[in-house]
Length: 61
Image (tube, rainbow, N blue to C red; front, side, top):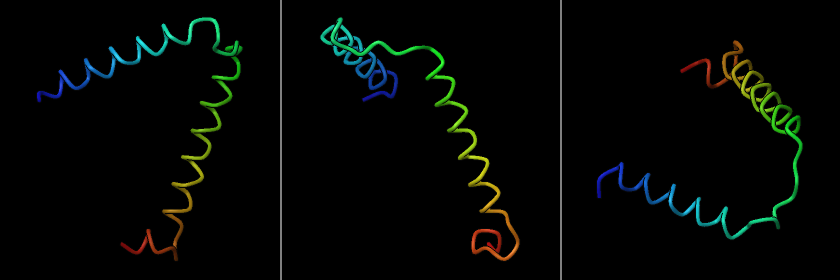
């Protein structure tokens, strides 16, 4: 199976699931998405700092 076909199948299924959800999905405000993004990047930053701190196993490799 070609990777593009696999991606097309995922998109098709996502569209089906969104249609099935209809109005049953909870209403979310846009700021929650921004908060989730900021939190995610903060966790990435903390992880990178921990991984590159001198004396850690990850920094020794």
